Image (tube, rainbow, N blue to C red; front, side, top):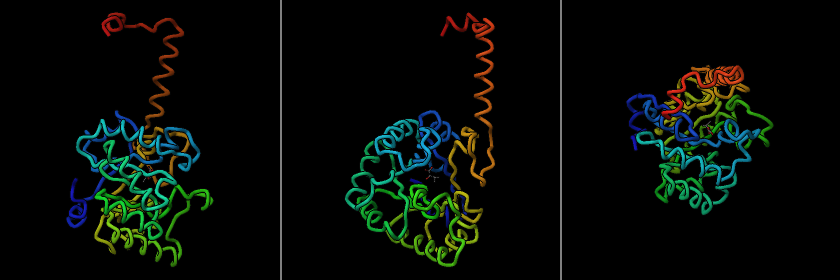
Length: 261
Ligand code: KIV
């Protein structure tokens, strides 16, 4: 495992992206990404759920197994889905299941309210990535995906959360949709790296949902993402070309290639 605290000390930015399948994991790993997260965002961008609260442990384990086969260099972190870490014992049991199938670290959503679970995981020797700010697993209670750190009390709570997860043994903390100035203050307040998503440029690293980065989920793109590719358009273009070729009777334009495969 890379020394992420040391990267923070040196001012070296940490890069992280999500993967849910073998080819994507392998491509990201070959590109030199530092961290690959099997995020429970799989529920939305792959499984078609409206939010992440329906993602099950079995689904996360299934996708983590596939990703683990494709990762050689990056740190492989797996998301613990909702209600799989309600007590310290349950959290350790869940974390161990991910480690057994190839995850090198786990992540759960929460700060000071989950210190007991985080301590149990880190004391069991399992590297842990924290996640504070906007918590997608709480979207129903929150009534939407809202920016965090807008009020003084929210900002103070976030700084307290960051300190609490650091003390509990986290090696890094994701800051999701936190006001950029508060993300900067959190980054300065703790020694473990902050990995931002929609939280401005002052974080020690950045993470994105790969489908957002490459334009593979065109029906919704978060405001803070500028897609670097338009993969959905390429898929539509290739599928349309195939449909037209097939319907016009030109499907096997290169029969020698077809017979040799
Ligand atoms: O599930 C996920 O992809 C995540 C990232 C957005 C940090 O938790």
